[in-house]
Amino acid sequence: MSDAAASAGYDDFLPRNSRGRRYARHVSDLSERDQIARAAAGDRMAQSALVNRHMPVVWRVAFRMLRDRQEAEDVTQETFLRAWKMLPEWEGRSKFSTWACTVAINLCRDRMKKKAPVLMETLPEREAGDLPPEQALHQKQAGARISALIDALPERQKEALILSALEGMGNKEAAAAMQVSVEALESLLSRARRTLRQALAEGQEE
Image (cartoon, helix red, strand yellow):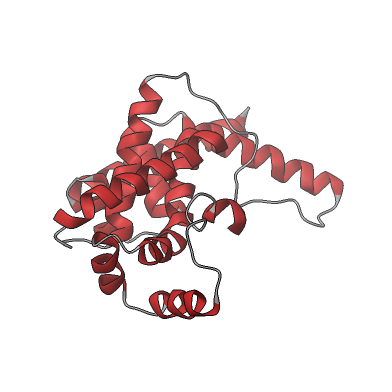
């Protein structure tokens, strides 16, 4: 998602004068804890700084779960709208990004219960670039197959794989985002990887 799209709906309120820009830069340089404190008090620049810092990962998680850009944007926006309401009671027991991903995951689960699964054609992080046509086609087909296999995983296994393997979260953070124990997360990852390996091996034999 572009930077312009990522900030849409949140930067409209920012002052355009030089004093406002200086304050915006000041807020962006604050620690996350200070930004959260100001955002909880209604400081919209602090809220915007948190959005700019954490929206990309929230959007990617939502998109990888829902496979729909508009739905992912809706979930991302709702995640942060909920965040502003919940921040005054937030106790800071986990990183803001972990907490935001938990909210996004729960919103995605609700939406997934109401719709049929949609398989994307390619993995978002894989692009053909300047590859030869034959190699680019092979990479696209391989990406589409892996994407389809991930989408076919049980919901919890898919979430674990998205957070740990695709988003690069540590096991502790991913477990916190999913609200499960680290042991449960590791079990989900093990089963997901085993299923993928088996499916890929069967595909090579065909």
